[in-house]
Length: 294
Image (cartoon, rainbow, N blue to C red; front, top):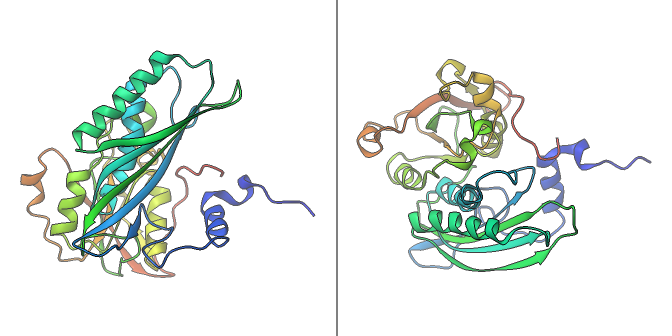
């Protein structure tokens, strides 16, 4: 019997297999969203998130280490934003070769500090360990945040007829945007408070991968208006769909959602309707985007 490999099944199927093998929380509390949501009573819900950067996958060693540090925190901030919340306390684990230069790590931490300071978060602790010589550096970031009760936005609440919206412009991560993006923390909170969003996530693996995930979580299909997809300057639709690491917000909202206040609140940040959810089994499919094992 030939054993299947990770490359045979891909990332989503792997996650589905693994979460079935261990105790998990109730709906909305366990795996499946950008953050885990913990209800401890009171006005705020607790958000938990973990993420990792791997040398050669998420960054190259010749990249500006301060920009890599920014990205390490900003990726997690983006996940909190996708729930309508904010990040507060961060834990960082470094698994590094002993030959790594001290200066690189110090500048990496300066970059993390830049992002933490901008969004009012703090470093709470972490861990360091060594990897075998020749192995890639691995940086793991875990964090705790919060969102107001009644404002947490999951991936699973979309309904047929909801409009599909995206912030900003897509594509261009391979040209360097993946190191300089701004997590949409303020925008996520505004969306949660003003647009009655039914589902939301951040675009980390590309619209072609993440839109089907959101629709599936909501038990829906989707129709994408390709001509409406906002592309970064110099990028075509294929790049906007598949490059990944946009870290813009993808969300659904009722057809009558009033977005008229967006421009005054976020001048210069576009908000674009790119399609609608349809009943499950209808609509279309998309191919592409980033899969760690595909």
